Amino acid sequence: MIPSGLKYTNDSHDARWLAHLLRLDILPTGYIYPKEERATRDLLRKRAQMVRLSTTNILSIQNLFARNTGGSIRGDTIKRMPVEDVALLLPHEDHALALSCNLSVLQQCQKQIKILQRTVLRRIRLRPEFQSLLTVPGIGQILALTIMLETGDITRFDKAGNFASYARCVDSKKVSNGKKKGENNRKNGNKYLAWAFVEAANFSIRFSDTIKSYYQRKSAKTKKVIAIKAVAHKLARACYYVMRDNVAFDVKKAFM
Image (cartoon, rainbow, N blue to C red; front, side):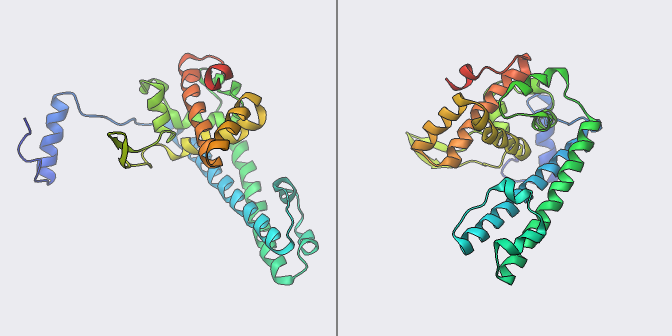
């Protein structure tokens, strides 16, 4: 039976309907993050913003260099480059000025990232139930802390699929009779946790031959960004069991 009033909404009707759901104990409730860890979590979110900004400036420098010289330059070379050497790379004054602007912003971002990392490591340590995250290839101390602080209480997720969905590692689409009929809200979930697992995926293919082989098989059939997302999905599901059961990561179970 559909209660009356649902087709007409105002504050009074909404309050009555919410009270009805609460009385029946079927009102979904949100997770309230512990207040004492919110500030440190925000510092890690600021670090993630600085990392994204650094990547943007590195790509801008690489594109500028490629357009004007036809060559390529590595990201780690750019990070170590003194501003005085810009004129040697691009002799044209305007191009050199554009590159030096990107390089100045990049160097400042790198400086702030180091300050944020030192501060976070002084503020908080991995709790025992999250120590096993360090056994996952591609997840270091900072990424493990990010996952821990963004996840909160792992027991609030009933299944690995729920956690992967919260980390935005699951497709959001509507299917009827085998045909796609549309998409749901793809942004539903934790964007910082999604970023952390994509970062972990990019690092994991460097440190694990098994994960690298899985990524290569996927990227041969589809776009590289989708293949990375597939790796992130696998890592998210594996990390759920690593955190819930406090066990070491087993790459064979996750990727074989």
